[in-house]
Image (cartoon, rainbow, N blue to C red; front, side, top):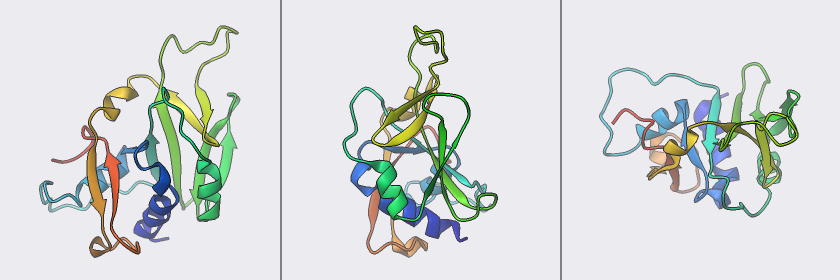
Length: 169
């Protein structure tokens, strides 16, 4: 599977939530390269199958992200004992395909009053993992344009948010 095709499908599926979601991790580095302010690097970007998308959990996100992902060919795969379980939203072959996972900041001790781990949450139909100190990546993200001229098969250009602390700038 062409990873830019997969990125395009993910971006299209998540288009209504672009103002709430921030690309972080390996794909943030790749997307930074599309920005005119980025240094032109001689080496190929690191390949990663997963796309990490972060969001602030303080404000509710409207709509159903899971349904939008399914409509664009993604499948939800649940794992673990947490409630809700950890989820990967996969596209293509499970072992060689592309997948997205959602992350949100962990606030507090990480233990619920019931004594269970506070490791995941459900919002807008998706399951997100809670990660400590993730909130720093949500501060002042860059808006970068995904454009068909970069080989991303989109109908038209699309702006996405990328964690400003994630790239080779």
